[in-house]
Length: 402
Image (cartoon, rainbow, N blue to C red; front, side, top):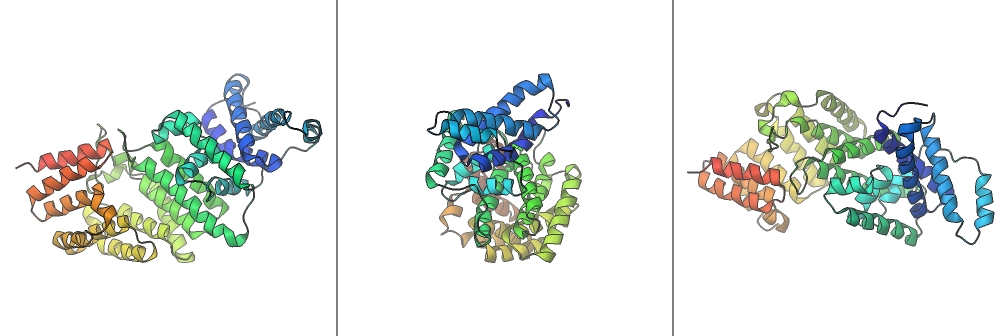
């Protein structure tokens, strides 16, 4: 028997593999997920007193299986099925189980919020309360979302298995998207008092790292992992002592995570040389250019502008357009950036987004129009729901007071 140091992390690591093994045996995701959650709760209560079993994953599979047997007792074939279960060998954990579980949680029949919540619960091993805290949602809302997602999987008759090779690529696109959304919500929270929600970024990186180990030749999975590492490496210097936002150009780069940067650069360098180029790889390459600059003024903006040009071709979006405008302004000057912003006036997403006003404010300030910049900073502050961003933008406006 071992100690209990790091018990929450151990349970979280075991959870998806245990669930996958139990689902593979019984085929009922909804009931099996409930049984595994009860097994995890039992372990959290017992192991601090009894110690961690020599094979914790097998222990959890056994307990969850027993709970599932109890549920089977109320079904028509209770005796026959229970007797069969008692004589079955313990299910082994297969290498593809976690991938199959990720694909199940990101099934197209589920809404994106449901995919995110179910992934955090079933694959991430987070409790309903932990998910609620991370997403700033009422616990009841998260519980309902998980319940409905499991019912939807049951109603659609989706099976716990890997799709045919020809279908895997499309399904992986949804998985990568969900992991990216989880990371982004953790790195720059869309609302609330905190800029970062570390539990979400950490979980997104952990799950993406597992996916990369399972699919080492998938260039976009590798690109996503590199992007997360290179972006999260800056987190220690993104906020001041009082929690205020510190923009990239003003961050203390000596506080960046050098090990994460080195790993991210190594992954994206290898991937760009060996895999077809995709959007996540290009975003990772952009992040690498930023992270490898010792000072903000050393940033290779022409290279970043070229990368955004490629990204705009592969995966155009309003935010890609806006970031490309920033890069162009750093190369060609603020007036060129302002002119480019004016050409996006017909884009409804950019027209309403707080970042558009913040970029315009920054470019106006660089061009010497302090009054115009102050007005745009205030507009950006009114549009964002993130209080750290609000405080930063308001402070920028106050700094330019005439």
